[in-house]
Length: 203
Ligand SMILES: [Mg+2]
Image (cartoon, rainbow, N blue to C red; front, top):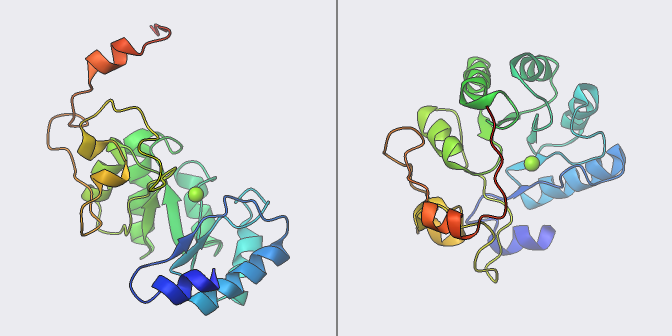
């Protein structure tokens, strides 16, 4: 972590998401202090409370300088507001898949704005591109499961600029927002049908 800060910390924002893997609050504190030293922009979901302890993260915030980002594992509007009011986080995670679709996630985003804080949407996807484009108070579009040595980690059901691969990120670090109706992109039904393994009908 310190080496990453030394090499690139002066030219890019550094964020870490241990995905609740550290065993103890103490380990989270040690990593948080390293984040301070390396100049990280945020520390997300560090330890095995599952990312849900308002009190634990409030105490962690008292001990480190690096802002923390929580609430990926808090679902819905009221839970997010409770987490903020109780001092459990700095940045606030929201997501259309966890918080009640676009409508629910946007409620969280606006509530976060009302507290003067920033909302960060959890993961990629067309809906999140639209949500981020529709709010003032978001900083980054999150892409996961990426590696420069892996050509593709997601099925190419959308045009390349919308498939959340590294090649879809431009030289400024930006991604495109679809302009069509709905989510704004036609799915590649030829590819989907050619790779179909089963069909489920919901009525
Ligand atoms: Mg996360």
